[in-house]
Length: 511
Image 1 (cartoon, one colour):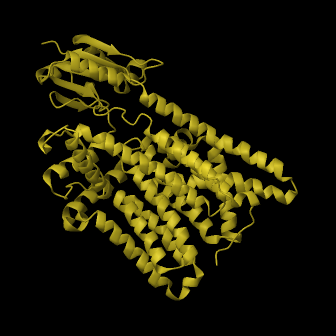
Image 2 (spheres, rainbow, N blue to C red; image 1 turned 30 degrees about the horizontal axis):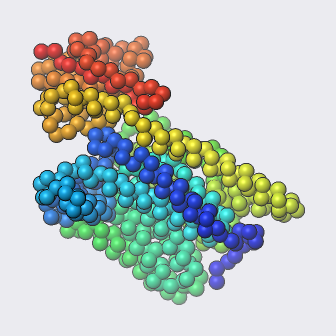
């Protein structure tokens, strides 16, 4: 029997209109500006998925020949690519596979990822209903407007589907605890296997159904059998969507060893505990929601000891702690790596608001002031992330310096020219001989000229530090200035209030 704790009568009701508004906002925020940068300013890892899925469609082979990610994202985009190709053939865009180009397949792939991201808010809502309707609505609302999640739901990357499957594993683990059947725990295990098949570290999600199984007392006589079924379902789901893990075992092991070496030996400048916390505050939740999440976590540890609802509180607080600790051991750092944590943190923030304020009833504080306090804290938690997401989407929808530079290059630089670009913020079409480097100063001007390079594109994200602080970067400053003064500057595209992006300088290498 599932333990229940005291709730306000109003916390037992749910509003379909409110839920629909939350889901609509999640969809709108994730589709707004979805075309950004296609096909020349895509996210750095998007081609790893989209181009491989496209090549799998053209070759007819299901072997991705790529193990940096497991198979789910690749096979999902393969299905999307097939659907996109059929739609294009019906619409007269092409009459053979040879005519299709990969640039036509990014938009559909992004839309699918955006919808998966929006669906995560619904899963979070269902998780929150185990605490109450107001918990569920606030947690889902925060998930819907969370800027880190909104931003990366715009791109064909693995992190957004991973977050969905982690949240789904959380929900199915709670359901399995409620039902207490082997099949329900196996379903939760399968969801964790899908998380692992999306990204290897998603396998940590298996911790949730295993904990739920171990703490579900009616299962005591067959607990080990149920745990075994849960682990087997997880492994089966993983192998179903990442079959070449076994079918090409040597290639997988080589790739996995290389990845773990990179994550272990990269150099970072500060503590990852503090760095990732800064990302959570600055790029995701903001201070009000983050402080409320800490309050919810503190309440969670208390409930974990005293009850009621030991299992659901255990799942709410243990997974984010374990996952965050795991992140701090990996020395390649990206803010998006935090995304699988966000469903749990959204829930904890909602707990901090609703359950935290509900504790005031012990002091005989009337219900109206408590409701007003919940409303105020809800606004404080939701407003900063919502404003950040709207601002990010507006900037994404604007014409950027990269857009303008790309258009200028197509109009003014002849096809076949050799172009070297700093960073990969802009990808040129195949009619150019494009090379991408971190810094132009890696070679002297004479070396670029001897290599037959005709044009150089400098990016302020690379040269900015040298030019803004020449006394602290004397050598870098001198090397850049030699390149800038010896070549002929054709165009400078600078950012402005209405044109976001880095400053880009386009130079002609003088023969």
